[in-house]
Amino acid sequence: MGRDQRRRRAPWLSRHPIPALLTLVALVYGRLLGAGFVRFDDDLHVYANPYLNPATWQSVARLWQHTYEHLYVPLAYTFFAAIGWFATVPAHVDGSLGQSISLAPTAFHLASLLLHLANTWLTFSLVRRLSGRSRPACLTALVFALHPLQLESVGWISELRGVTSAAFLLSALNVLVLSRGTPDPRRARLFVSVTVPLLVCAMLCKPSAAAAPLVALAIDRINLGTSWRKALVVATGWAVAVLPFAWLTRVSQTLPLSAASAWWQRPFVAGDALAFYLYKTVAPVGLAVDYGRTPQHVMSVPWGYLAWTLSVALLALGYVNRRRYPLGWLGAVLFVLFLLPTSGLVPFAYQSYSTVADRYAYLALIGAGLVVSAAADRVTSPKTVVSGAAVLFVTLGALSFVQSRYWLTTTDLLRHTIDVNPQAGFAYNNLGDLELGNGDLPAALSDYRACVEHDPTRTKAYLNLADVYTALDQPADAERALAQVSGTSEMTADDLSNLGIVLMKMNQPGRALAALAAATAAEPDSPTYLFNQANALAAVGRFDQAEATFRHCIAQAPTLAGAHTGLGIVLAETGRLDEAITEFRAALRLQPNDPAALDDLKRAEGMQQPR
Image (cartoon, rainbow, N blue to C red; front, top):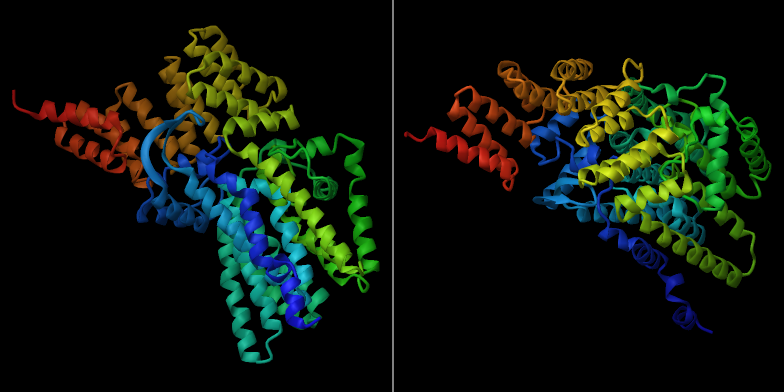
């Protein structure tokens, strides 16, 4: 049989692996294009972000000058802003969120899917460069692209930050490997120099790329056989690029007490995390956004002290067989290294919910794919490999397609989280927020009560209970709810600001203003806290202070339409109608369909007319 005839009979999938794989990935994840935002940080990062609604050059510049939500990831928010410019829609109330929004989620989901497809191609290219063959590259890319653990990264709009960071890091690794195969030293140095800005861009999207220097060192030494001197030069240069951003992240985050752990506990916490990821990689079922594996939980069960033995044993097995299975050994090392920044060896804020999360395994699955590829290399029958790959694809694709339905709406996501982890207090609380926003007070009260029952330490739930009791005209119950958090050391600036809002509704302006002042004192440049404080000051007639606070708020977030409206009301109350009209018009330029700002403008213009 001639070569051309064999080529004609070869399946299209084997002749065009990447187009086929990308097409299949698009089919598996395609229904996410119809998904919405979810009340799981999408409000903080996107649809209620004061710097993105709408985004301007000035508001984006502000994100480059300061941290936002205790992270410095301005490049990620710049991408959010760019997507938002194409996704702006008339302001409307979204019942699945329980609040008004002016951004459409489809553009963000499309960007996430396209980036995941790009990362799949970058993974294929990287492994093909490392192995010199297409089969291990295709198998690794298949595992990376279709594993159900990837749904959190691809389906959650907020995690566009991580997917974008991965794209820059994978690009840097591809260029590094390309440089090692370039015979021209000057050209090789040029390639290496390009990797540094790519790595900086990765860190400016999400600091989980901090493992990059160790990953580069592992690839250089294990796969490419680069000398220690040459490999350490690159690893050191990458470390110099990474460490300032890692340090900035560490000092910007306030570590809750529930996320803290003693130094001697951290290796056990990390060992449990690695064992958990190994299990979920092999058996990707029961996936959720909150597993409740806090450091305290891990250290309260016997398994928490033994889990590390599994990872160490498997690594030892890989090391012993490193020459027989070089790709498998590299995969095992990369699996661990990519997980290292979020393993719990260094405490981080999300550990107050769980040390482990599906999104942290996004790049680690490249390591898992390399292990699968190494195992396939020991199979001599090509038909067996193809059959095994087909079974693997169908299984992973089906599981991912099923998992994707939980990301379609907030209710789907939160109810599924509770099914997997009934102790997930935040899920009850966020469901209560959704129901409260839609005016369903009995349902909101039920979910807030469930939240404090399962997680008595969640301050926001007690504040929300007080809010609902106030709306139900049950002031005694509202006070009892507030008594659960009064004086607690766990009150964050966000808690204090929310407390002030609730106390204003309870007609206790003195206590409310004290709480709001404490929130702005803790974070003086937060537009949200300044806005809440200014509204409260205006409500009690302290117009001079309200005006100053609104102006400070606008200086921090010039595109916050509500702040312009609030300032306009204050100016109108103090007889400065011309200035008030200017502010109302500014609000309408930012939110053209805001009925409140339009009514205020008409009222001010009517007052300005001679009688």
